[in-house]
Amino acid sequence: MSFKINDKVTWIGKIDWELRQFHGYEYSVHRGSSYNAYLIRDEKNVLIDTVWQPYAKEFIENLKKEIHLNQIDYIIVNHAEVDHSGALSELMKEIPDTPIYCTANGIKSIKGHYHEDWNFVPVKTGDTINIGTNDLIFVEARMLHWPDSMFTYMTNDNILFSNDAFGQHYASEYMYNDLVDPDELYSEAIKYYANILNPFSTLVERKIDELIKLELPVDMICPSHGIIWRKDPLQIVEQYKNWAQAYQENQITIIYDTMWQGTRRMADAIAEGIKSFDSKVNIKLYNASKTDKNDIITEVFKSRAIILGSPTVNGSILTSMAAITDLIKGLRFKNKKAAAFGCYGWSGESLKILNEHLEKAGFEVVSEGIREIWNPDQSALERCRDFGKKFAESL
Ligand code: FEO
Image 1 (cartoon, helix red, strand yellow):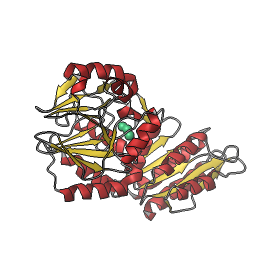
Image 2: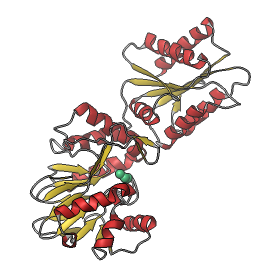
Image 3: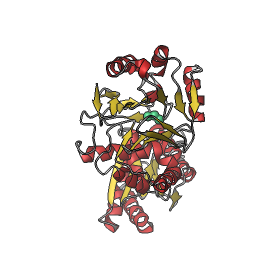
């Protein structure tokens, strides 16, 4: 499949409707994804990025329907992660001398993955190649989200090829932001930001400011996953700037796991207590062993505070809570408050462990938390309601 974006640029990629897990099993993909590569035809012909390796042969066949491979003058690798560079090996078998433009870190990454010494041309911010009526300007985007990431900007047509930035794991045959359901689009865009880009928010903000200072007109943003932003394309840039500034909504998220319902009943009572103090706050409860971890992360991203709950088991916390707290720590959320709770039978370490996890993850732990022995009775649940109320008061 391919389609023309304008008279010079053709989308040539793969819409992966089957995909349900990405980065191994680290990122759930409920709506599939796409690997977007772009072919620019000018006096010089340029290929920007490729697709994931399982679709390499299909990609090359489709590319051959568009252009004789020997007529590709330059290959640009905006980012070497294998979902975009996965067809390089197949492609370079056919056109081994074609120059590959990428950052110096891109060369290291490509060599690290494919162990080939192709004709690399390192580029840095501001480097430009003329391809005829258009120039291509490179803008390094280090750690957005890998050291090698970069953007390519096409003059005259004013297209920003942004690779992962501004992308979404979202399969759609419509392929443009003005044609798809905006709720679906933004729910995938925010999940993508929360789960992939959040640790690099300071760099996101800086890079956006740098792009604004360059005063490059942008008529279209073509990311490497999901749909293309052509209607009011800077809306997603504005949104990223908002998300990068320790984003939060009026939401408190309670994440817990439970063995015999005791900790779950505590979670419900805490939520009641919060509601009794603040009827407007959006309280959401998720059992970590029953809920997709990346969806939980998106809810943490939207929250101004979270409360974690686990019973004590083997002197520790339940494994689902250990996994989600580790994931939360890695994503480096900022400016969020937190507390912990859990029931126990004898030793009762879960509260202390959860508090330690929260502090290490950079949350402001606003109370010592609450633990209740065995299965909470009515007076214990009343204490949980009071705890929830006081927690809400402290925000
Ligand atoms: Fe879509 Fe970082 O690869």
